Amino acid sequence: MIPSLPRNRSMNRLFEEILAGKLSTTELMQRVAETTKFELDSAAEHLADGQIVALSVKMSDQLRVLQVESMICTGCYLYLYRIVTENVGDEEREQNFWEAAEVSRAQAYRAIAVWTAFGKSFVAEGHLTKQFVSESLKILAGETTPPAARDEALQLARNGQHISIQVAKQLQKKHAAGRTSAGKSTIVAKETSTPVAKPEAKQDRPLKGNAAKAIWSYVGSVVRLIVQPAKTSSQADIEGIIRDLEAALARFRSEHQIPAASKSPDAA
Image 1: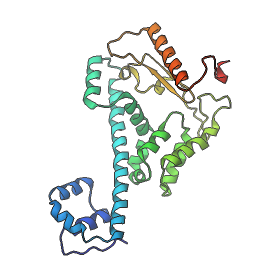
Image 2: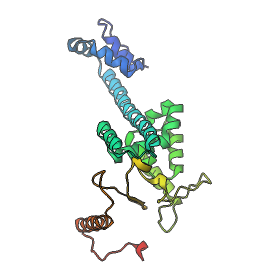
Image 3: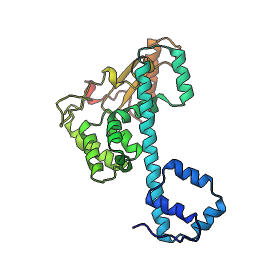
Image 4: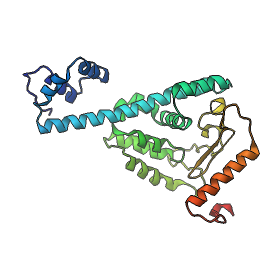
C-alpha cells in the first residue's frame, strides 16, 4: 500500500504520483521544472521515514530501467546503422558518424549484442527491463555466453527475479558446462539444435563489413582480438601488426610475471 501523504500543499501529490507510478519520465521532469526548490523542500518536510525509503526504492528502480532502456535503444540504432552501411564503404562518412555519435566501437559492439539478444523480448514484454541491470545484459549478451543462459535469465525475470551482475555470471558459468572439454571457444547450446557460429565467422566481428574497418579478428575462449588500423586511412601493414601483437603479448607477460617461454596447454 502506498503511504498516504498530507495534502496541505499541492506539491505533495507529486510524491504520491511518483510512488504510484503515474508519471512518465517526461511528465516528471516537466513537473519538477515548473516547481521551485522552496516548494519541493516544503513538501519533502512532510515525508515520514517510511515514505522516504519507498521513494528511494522507486527512484533507484527507475534509474536502473532508464539505463537498460538507453542501452537497448542505442543498440537498436547502431544495429540499423550497421545494416545500412555494411556494404557502402565510405570511410569519411563513417568516421564522421562515429565522431558525431561519440560512441566507441567497443560500446557499439556491446550495445548491438544486447539488442540482438534481448531487443525483441524487451519490446514484447516491457516489464522485463525492471529485472535487469545494464552490466548483467552485457554479460549475458556476450558471445561466450551460451544461449541457454539468456533463456534462463529471461524466464527468471518473468518470475520476478532480479538479474544482477552476480546472477548473470552464475548463469554464464552454469551453462558454460556445455562447452567442449578441450576448452575451445565453440559453445554447445543444450536447448537448441542450431550450433553457435565459429569464432572466425563474419558475424562475430564487432561491426560487420565496412562499418568495422577491422583488418583481422579472432575470438578465443576468454578474449576477443580486433585488429584495425590506428587511422581509418591507414593501409594494412602486416609486419607492423605482428610487431604490435608481439609487443602487446610481451607487455602482458611482463605485467603478470609470466615467463616468456610459458605456453598454454592448447599450444602444443
